[in-house]
Length: 228
Image 1 (cartoon, rainbow, N blue to C red):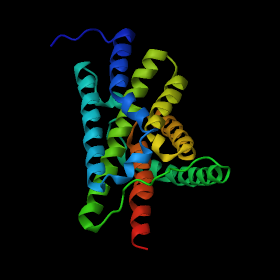
Image 2: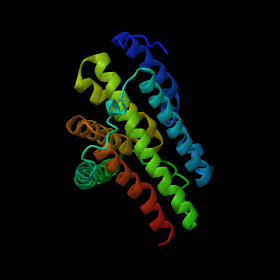
Image 3: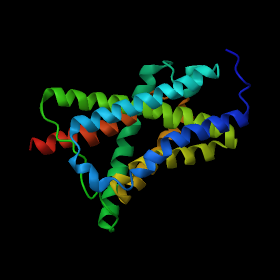
Protein backbone atom coordinates (compact mmCIF):
# COMPACT_ATOMS: atom_id res chain seq x y z
CA UNK A 1 0.00 0.00 0.00
CA UNK A 2 1.45 3.34 -1.04
CA UNK A 3 0.92 6.06 1.55
CA UNK A 4 0.77 9.75 0.83
CA UNK A 5 3.35 11.89 2.67
CA UNK A 6 2.23 12.75 6.19
CA UNK A 7 2.18 16.50 5.66
CA UNK A 8 0.45 19.01 7.91
CA UNK A 9 -2.43 19.17 5.42
CA UNK A 10 -2.90 15.39 5.46
CA UNK A 11 -2.83 15.36 9.26
CA UNK A 12 -5.35 18.21 9.40
CA UNK A 13 -7.74 16.38 7.06
CA UNK A 14 -7.40 13.19 9.08
CA UNK A 15 -7.98 15.11 12.31
CA UNK A 16 -11.10 16.81 10.92
CA UNK A 17 -12.54 13.45 9.84
CA UNK A 18 -11.91 12.04 13.31
CA UNK A 19 -13.44 15.06 15.05
CA UNK A 20 -16.46 14.87 12.76
CA UNK A 21 -16.98 11.30 13.98
CA UNK A 22 -16.64 11.96 17.70
CA UNK A 23 -17.65 15.56 18.43
CA UNK A 24 -21.42 15.31 17.72
CA UNK A 25 -21.88 12.48 20.22
CA UNK A 26 -19.64 14.22 22.77
CA UNK A 27 -21.53 17.51 22.54
CA UNK A 28 -24.85 15.69 22.84
CA UNK A 29 -23.81 14.69 26.35
CA UNK A 30 -24.83 18.21 27.46
CA UNK A 31 -28.44 17.47 26.50
CA UNK A 32 -29.03 13.82 27.47
CA UNK A 33 -28.79 14.00 31.24
CA UNK A 34 -32.55 14.07 31.68
CA UNK A 35 -32.97 10.89 29.60
CA UNK A 36 -30.12 8.71 30.82
CA UNK A 37 -31.62 7.70 34.17
CA UNK A 38 -33.75 4.95 32.64
CA UNK A 39 -30.84 3.22 30.92
CA UNK A 40 -29.69 -0.04 32.49
CA UNK A 41 -26.18 -0.45 33.84
CA UNK A 42 -25.39 -3.35 31.50
CA UNK A 43 -26.54 -1.41 28.43
CA UNK A 44 -24.61 1.71 29.43
CA UNK A 45 -21.40 -0.12 30.33
CA UNK A 46 -21.56 -2.24 27.17
CA UNK A 47 -22.10 0.85 25.02
CA UNK A 48 -19.12 2.64 26.59
CA UNK A 49 -16.84 -0.37 26.11
CA UNK A 50 -17.83 -0.84 22.46
CA UNK A 51 -17.60 2.89 21.66
CA UNK A 52 -14.16 3.29 23.20
CA UNK A 53 -12.81 0.15 21.55
CA UNK A 54 -14.17 1.25 18.15
CA UNK A 55 -12.50 4.67 18.44
CA UNK A 56 -9.27 3.09 19.67
CA UNK A 57 -9.15 0.73 16.68
CA UNK A 58 -9.82 3.67 14.35
CA UNK A 59 -6.90 5.59 15.85
CA UNK A 60 -4.64 2.53 15.60
CA UNK A 61 -5.69 2.15 11.97
CA UNK A 62 -4.69 5.75 11.24
CA UNK A 63 -1.32 5.16 12.89
CA UNK A 64 -0.77 1.92 10.92
CA UNK A 65 -1.86 3.52 7.65
CA UNK A 66 0.60 6.36 8.14
CA UNK A 67 3.48 3.98 8.96
CA UNK A 68 3.76 5.48 12.42
CA UNK A 69 4.78 3.48 15.46
CA UNK A 70 2.48 3.00 18.43
CA UNK A 71 5.07 4.87 20.49
CA UNK A 72 3.94 7.99 18.60
CA UNK A 73 0.77 7.72 20.70
CA UNK A 74 2.73 7.18 23.90
CA UNK A 75 1.91 3.46 23.89
CA UNK A 76 5.21 2.12 25.13
CA UNK A 77 6.28 -0.28 27.89
CA UNK A 78 9.42 1.73 28.62
CA UNK A 79 9.96 2.03 32.40
CA UNK A 80 6.41 0.76 32.87
CA UNK A 81 6.65 0.22 36.62
CA UNK A 82 8.12 3.67 37.15
CA UNK A 83 5.48 5.34 34.98
CA UNK A 84 2.62 3.55 36.74
CA UNK A 85 4.06 4.58 40.12
CA UNK A 86 4.32 8.22 39.00
CA UNK A 87 0.71 8.12 37.83
CA UNK A 88 -0.47 6.64 41.13
CA UNK A 89 1.40 9.28 43.14
CA UNK A 90 0.19 12.18 41.00
CA UNK A 91 -3.38 10.92 41.18
CA UNK A 92 -3.64 11.58 44.93
CA UNK A 93 -3.21 15.40 44.93
CA UNK A 94 -5.22 15.72 41.70
CA UNK A 95 -8.13 13.73 43.14
CA UNK A 96 -8.11 15.73 46.39
CA UNK A 97 -7.94 19.04 44.51
CA UNK A 98 -10.73 18.27 42.03
CA UNK A 99 -12.96 16.83 44.78
CA UNK A 100 -12.54 20.03 46.80
CA UNK A 101 -13.06 22.10 43.65
CA UNK A 102 -16.36 20.38 42.80
CA UNK A 103 -17.58 20.77 46.38
CA UNK A 104 -16.78 24.48 46.35
CA UNK A 105 -18.43 25.01 42.97
CA UNK A 106 -21.58 23.20 44.13
CA UNK A 107 -21.75 25.45 47.20
CA UNK A 108 -21.25 28.46 44.92
CA UNK A 109 -24.36 27.44 42.98
CA UNK A 110 -22.95 25.68 39.92
CA UNK A 111 -25.04 22.78 38.74
CA UNK A 112 -24.69 19.16 39.73
CA UNK A 113 -25.97 16.42 37.40
CA UNK A 114 -29.81 16.47 37.40
CA UNK A 115 -29.91 12.66 37.32
CA UNK A 116 -27.21 10.22 38.44
CA UNK A 117 -25.90 7.68 35.99
CA UNK A 118 -27.62 4.28 36.29
CA UNK A 119 -24.70 2.56 38.00
CA UNK A 120 -26.41 0.33 40.53
CA UNK A 121 -23.81 -2.42 40.56
CA UNK A 122 -25.26 -5.69 41.78
CA UNK A 123 -23.26 -8.85 42.22
CA UNK A 124 -19.76 -9.98 41.34
CA UNK A 125 -20.46 -10.18 37.60
CA UNK A 126 -21.59 -6.55 37.32
CA UNK A 127 -18.67 -5.42 39.47
CA UNK A 128 -16.34 -7.21 37.04
CA UNK A 129 -18.03 -5.50 34.09
CA UNK A 130 -17.65 -2.14 35.83
CA UNK A 131 -13.92 -2.73 36.35
CA UNK A 132 -13.58 -3.81 32.70
CA UNK A 133 -15.42 -0.66 31.56
CA UNK A 134 -13.13 1.54 33.64
CA UNK A 135 -10.00 -0.22 32.35
CA UNK A 136 -11.07 0.00 28.70
CA UNK A 137 -12.08 3.65 29.09
CA UNK A 138 -8.78 4.58 30.76
CA UNK A 139 -6.65 2.88 28.11
CA UNK A 140 -8.69 3.86 25.05
CA UNK A 141 -9.50 7.43 26.04
CA UNK A 142 -5.89 8.21 26.93
CA UNK A 143 -4.73 6.80 23.58
CA UNK A 144 -7.38 8.93 21.86
CA UNK A 145 -7.46 12.22 23.77
CA UNK A 146 -3.82 12.43 24.85
CA UNK A 147 -1.92 10.21 22.42
CA UNK A 148 -3.67 10.72 19.08
CA UNK A 149 -5.27 14.14 19.46
CA UNK A 150 -2.18 15.74 20.96
CA UNK A 151 -0.03 14.19 18.23
CA UNK A 152 -2.23 15.61 15.46
CA UNK A 153 -3.09 18.91 17.19
CA UNK A 154 0.59 19.50 17.91
CA UNK A 155 1.48 18.91 14.26
CA UNK A 156 -1.36 21.05 12.91
CA UNK A 157 -0.94 23.99 15.30
CA UNK A 158 2.84 23.75 15.86
CA UNK A 159 2.05 24.64 19.47
CA UNK A 160 2.24 22.23 22.43
CA UNK A 161 0.20 24.70 24.49
CA UNK A 162 -2.59 24.74 21.90
CA UNK A 163 -2.52 20.93 21.76
CA UNK A 164 -2.87 20.74 25.56
CA UNK A 165 -5.80 23.17 25.71
CA UNK A 166 -7.67 21.86 22.67
CA UNK A 167 -7.32 18.21 23.69
CA UNK A 168 -8.60 19.09 27.18
CA UNK A 169 -11.59 20.96 25.69
CA UNK A 170 -12.49 18.03 23.43
CA UNK A 171 -12.10 15.59 26.33
CA UNK A 172 -14.33 17.78 28.50
CA UNK A 173 -17.07 18.03 25.87
CA UNK A 174 -18.08 14.43 26.52
CA UNK A 175 -18.94 15.08 30.19
CA UNK A 176 -21.76 17.59 29.87
CA UNK A 177 -24.24 15.24 31.54
CA UNK A 178 -22.33 15.63 34.83
CA UNK A 179 -23.27 19.27 35.42
CA UNK A 180 -21.23 22.47 35.08
CA UNK A 181 -19.20 22.02 38.27
CA UNK A 182 -17.98 18.59 37.22
CA UNK A 183 -17.36 19.79 33.65
CA UNK A 184 -14.94 22.43 34.96
CA UNK A 185 -13.22 19.80 37.09
CA UNK A 186 -12.92 17.47 34.09
CA UNK A 187 -11.30 20.30 32.12
CA UNK A 188 -8.69 20.69 34.87
CA UNK A 189 -8.14 16.93 34.84
CA UNK A 190 -7.73 17.00 31.06
CA UNK A 191 -5.14 19.76 31.31
CA UNK A 192 -3.18 17.87 33.97
CA UNK A 193 -3.27 14.60 32.01
CA UNK A 194 -2.02 16.41 28.90
CA UNK A 195 0.82 18.08 30.81
CA UNK A 196 1.83 14.80 32.43
CA UNK A 197 1.83 13.14 29.01
CA UNK A 198 4.05 15.88 27.57
CA UNK A 199 6.38 15.46 30.54
CA UNK A 200 6.60 11.67 30.55
CA UNK A 201 6.28 10.97 26.78
CA UNK A 202 4.31 7.88 27.78
CA UNK A 203 0.64 7.18 28.44
CA UNK A 204 1.31 4.74 31.29
CA UNK A 205 1.13 7.46 33.96
CA UNK A 206 -2.04 9.08 32.59
CA UNK A 207 -3.74 5.71 32.02
CA UNK A 208 -3.04 4.90 35.68
CA UNK A 209 -4.44 8.26 36.82
CA UNK A 210 -7.50 7.89 34.59
CA UNK A 211 -8.16 4.36 35.80
CA UNK A 212 -7.92 5.32 39.47
CA UNK A 213 -10.15 8.39 38.95
CA UNK A 214 -12.90 6.38 37.27
CA UNK A 215 -12.51 3.35 39.52
CA UNK A 216 -13.09 5.45 42.63
CA UNK A 217 -15.63 7.85 41.14
CA UNK A 218 -17.67 5.31 39.18
CA UNK A 219 -17.15 1.91 40.75
CA UNK A 220 -16.22 2.19 44.42
CA UNK A 221 -18.41 5.18 45.33
CA UNK A 222 -21.51 3.72 43.66
CA UNK A 223 -20.78 0.31 45.17
CA UNK A 224 -20.53 1.79 48.66
CA UNK A 225 -23.71 3.82 48.19
CA UNK A 226 -25.79 0.81 47.23
CA UNK A 227 -24.36 -1.38 49.99
CA UNK A 228 -24.50 1.20 52.77
